[in-house]
Image 1 (cartoon, rainbow, N blue to C red):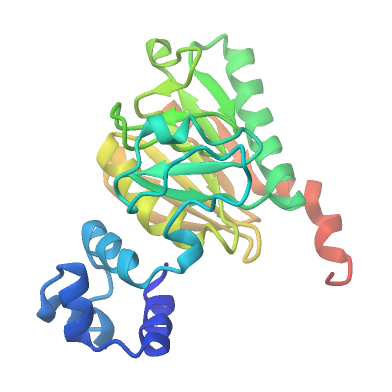
Image 2: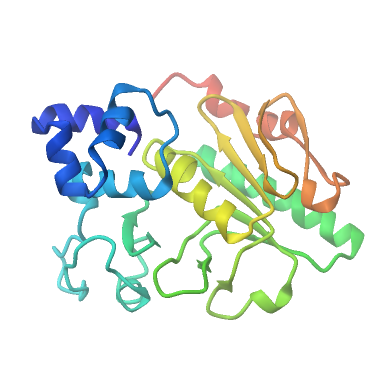
Length: 263
């Protein structure tokens, strides 16, 4: 959830700052600063605690409406890979620090952009006869090498082939691309941003198809965020800027979607 969404939910529930502090375990002073706007970038752990209190019910537990769902209902934050692997393949979810998040079906723009990015990365590696592995979702990434997190980035590059096992990518990729959607915006832009940075991902791109923007986080060199438009040529830092993705080409490939009347 974004802070704006949390504020709206707080008003809807009629919770005071003191009540939220009591339920979340976040100090009252911190809660007051967040909801007054005095703190614009709260810590990841603080956001998680607030989201546990203010999150939508549908995001607070695993729905069990189908008999093949054999996952026991637990408190968010306590799920493990054992629970993750019990969820049917047709239902896409991510497990992040013991919290299960449903993943909406991707849009056509989302899939086309991911495909173009992957193709350009793959072609570069093939031409250079490189050892790095561009990979595309759906693909499990056991980011922290523990039993509490399993994510599915849209596109990744893994340069250490020992991390690629048959079951998943075990450890942090070198490069990650996430393509934003309305349902994943806060997760990709806040929660997973912190996870990737702390896990050792070297470079992270957030692509916003609605605003035609690309936000680049170069964690390796501390140069972030840098915001580009879809008219930009963006270098891939993990390959010493030798590979460049021309987003004008990307946009031309999906332009027809933007020229149609809104559906």
